[in-house]
Each structure stands twice: as C-alpha cells, then as structure tokens.
Length: 120
Image 1 (tube, rainbow, N blue to C red):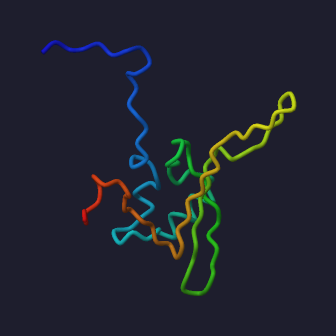
Image 2 (image 1 turned 180 degrees about the vertical axis):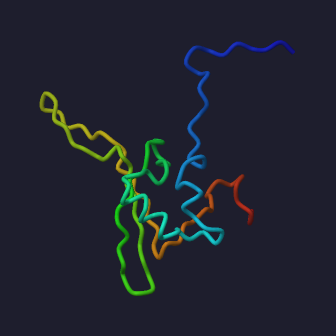
Image 3 (image 1 turned 60 degrees about the vertical axis):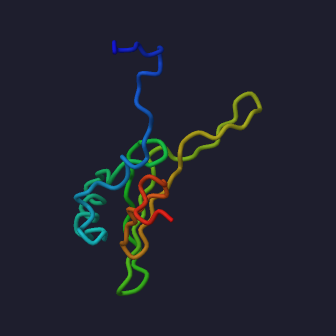
C-alpha cells in the first residue's frame, strides 16, 4: 500500500498527558519524591517536570512540612493564569495547573481505560 499524504497541519502528533509529569530522577522506586533532589532543584531554580495540561515546565516550590513525618510538595506550571482586559473583554491566559504530592507520594495511575490494570 503506498504511503498516504497527510493533510496540512495534521502531521503533528497529538498531545499525550501520560508523556508529561515529574522527571523520573526525582521519584524513587516506591513512588515517593526524593527530598534532597527536590531541595536541590528549588535552590538551583531548576524545573522538576513538564505540565500535563500544556506541556510547559513545572517550577517547584519549597516543600511544606505539615508534621515531622509528613512533607507536602508542590510545583506549578510556568504558564500561570493571568487575567487581561482588552477592549473591555476579560480574557484568561495561561495554564495554571499545579502538581501536588501530599506526603511526598506521587500517583502514576491513569484513568484511561486502555492503561488500567483492573479492567472491570
């Protein structure tokens, strides 16, 4: 079968949120954030991953120590939500997605039917 030509503008791959998220070197084998690497990224001003909504970079914030046994981590998309008014029309720009890891636990499960292990 000969190769079929694609329509103009449709040659780009679709956005897949499962390809984005925290960088793997920041998460250990059990799915918890490595505190020392997170603090290093905060101190150096490095990104910790990519946004699952828009694909832009995630900026980490210093972890919040809730108790002596629980630390919460948060990273926000670089494209923060901003309101602009142009000719009297309000417009919301940016993504504003925030990644939160309560107790340092990250969740790698997907809600996609094809990605689930317990298809009922």
